[in-house]
Length: 106
Length: 206
Image: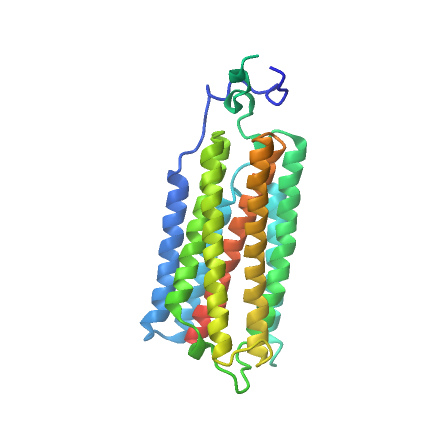
């Protein structure tokens, strides 16, 4: 009773909307599959280089999206400013990577 | 006021890391920090992408990299990320013991990742791929080493948090720290996704 941390909440045991581990296991399996596809595309070797690059970038972007949304809870509510912060970072990164790809050895 | 009254489950709110304004601000501030970290890693990636073919007379990426080892490191980090998400679930359910166990698993996997990376760097150095060998080697060690340093810091940080949980228990003050460290750990894994894609796999492709 001396504990004031719980003042506003009702009994937490009563209405638990805790997500089970399923969602995170699904995110894990998705990440695993995306990783294996990327490694397999390189190990196979016989595929056209440009096509391999597209597969690699696609798998990486998908996996990062899965992890940001599920494991880092970005899709949960109350994450608008957090999302804006990370998106701003990604925009800067894109600018720099494009610069590195197209301008440096021109 | 029996001892039972102080049992954590009866006192902590549903999501203890978001129960206080301080906790919520900590999480938001941490995301803004991660935005800055993204930029930081982005500059290192940009430098690496620009310089990755400049090998001088040092070994090339295709010659150096061993995909099975990279795959093992990737799996270790991916599983550790899963362990830290389970730690946060245990936190939400106020299961302190389970949370600590998952955090310890996270740390152990992080340490084995570091061990593998040290072994890997050691092998490269013995093959004549040193920090100053070429622009490729410099940008490689800076990028991958910086990620490794983040893993090392994460291990240290989570280790200290476990010690603090033992001392102070799970409260609305300690819960945001655990949550934020888990976000940090996932971020390390996210950066690794781009490292194995851009550095190792694309290095193999050419």
